[in-house]
Image (tube, rainbow, N blue to C red; front, side, top):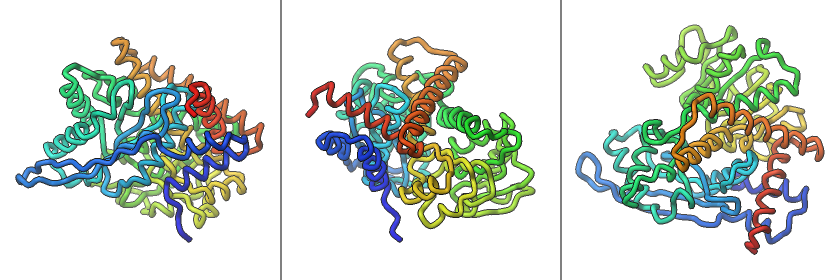
Length: 414
């Protein structure tokens, strides 16, 4: 059975929602196509003196509700289909949580594990030079994503500022705090997901101290989610990275696993645990499953093996449409990516606001504002789910599509 591409998945979810609410065909056609696709090839001098050509993308999906917003990933398998899907998901994500952005995404085809820090900096700056005419603090605002981080965002912001001839912190979010970053941003995606998870847990009547959780993915998002869960009394029994996973019936201390991973390069082999594959982790007998890795992990062929009562999608597009339908039929409560992982872009928005006002908030203020945004979004989506007798994913798309459609009509864009 052929697994649908990420963009095919995103279009399927969009179609499900628009069929239910009867969106105008012309607006639907607008929503199906990115507004702008930028593909660049840029040269970078490597440490050995050779010039190497790198391919990069930036896709701006829709800007009806404001400037576009979305991360930049550095990954060997980045392609246009994936970036288009991620850009469209960013549109829905921003809209669901009610922030005035549209969606965008960027990527560079590169394996960062094979680069020196100097090469990484040159690639980061060269990529920004290649797309500089298409981004800006009121046009398109990049941020970190897979295999990029605050240091890289700092280089990118600095490069753009140099090109503009003025300090422009609002062009990039996810920066180091010392140059305009926001407190709380480094773990915002996980914190937003945890806030959503807590809302779902209460709706389902689960008890944190009696609840077992498996987290697929142990990068920034997966580790911070596992850490926050552990700190709040949940039993994290399994985690995994790209090389494989570990399981302990007694529960793990995520901070200790993270230290072990930093030393060895993987969670595999952590003392007192049993090794599991990423596929096996998804099928563990746990109460909550948190996919926090890559797209297309829960498929039609393994959805029936999922034993968790609650799935909180911190990865983008981890579940294919057929798998999503199978989970709904099994009465698994799935909180979709466009709601569950919107904490990152929400705090990116807070960072952008702080940059423009040149007034910065405490970590407590940031987290309080994030909690308000995430809880309000959950309540709206849950209400729509009940009204339409749908799953949470379809409800989230209904909310987002209605808002974007109204913006398109209000601006007379067609």
